[in-house]
Image 1 (tube, rainbow, N blue to C red):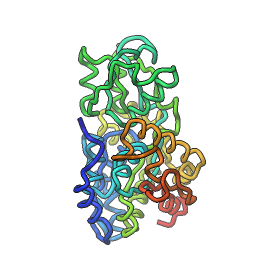
Image 2: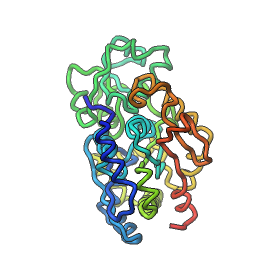
Image 3: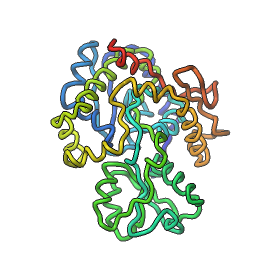
Image 4: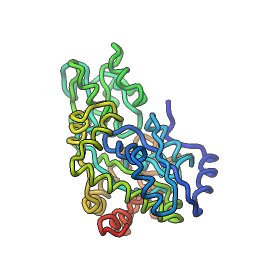
Length: 347
């Protein structure tokens, strides 16, 4: 079972390496519809173009296991990583690595789903084991779904931790009855005629947010890193918004589907192609409420940080200066500075 924490020694080694100016950076990403742009930015040379503009080098590395990519970032092996709001709060921020949401890329609007083998509804899960990436957004989605029908995890036949890399194969086995996962895995699993979608992230729209997060100390010491990353991202968002089929087809192929399949996944993703839309969402009154709900879930699961005394253990800062959680332990920051620069055309 993968642990969503790192050792104190790893943290000491990682944090000391960041508060300095440097010219070479590495960020990690994993396969997901809203994060496929990161692979394209690396392969197309767009990232190199923006990095060259600021006299730096940015390497974008694909990691096949999502949780492992966040663990590696938390341990200091990367300067940034693609992650959800929940997993950022629980893993790096909960582990004491001060992390900033540099780019708020989208929110899941149907890409994450609870899937049953056979006919039924959410109440059918009573007494049934469910496979998912334990303590991830899939776990959160399941909890929200169960709550909507008056059930809880205690009513299940257990939760079985399963890597996203193994999810499709797991669903194909006779032993697995239900899974919770994300696209493109959801689309692949739903091709099975026996698969029934019971609940998805459109039922809790705006709560599962997909980010590119970076080490706060690194960003503060190297603002050009932030400018290059955001500049490259929004150049590509412009191509995607314009429907560039060459770009979309390349991302579709990299994610294991075709153009139509990738476009279907994008249809269940609220992509913020325009930086102004990302800024507006990040500055909305709804975000602090969402993060408080997420913190409550993580605390209930015992994964908000080792020895966390309450759901307010980790402070989360917002663009207007407000903070939820502990004001003396701010480890997660939503910062619209660089996205606003993109909106203003000043990168």
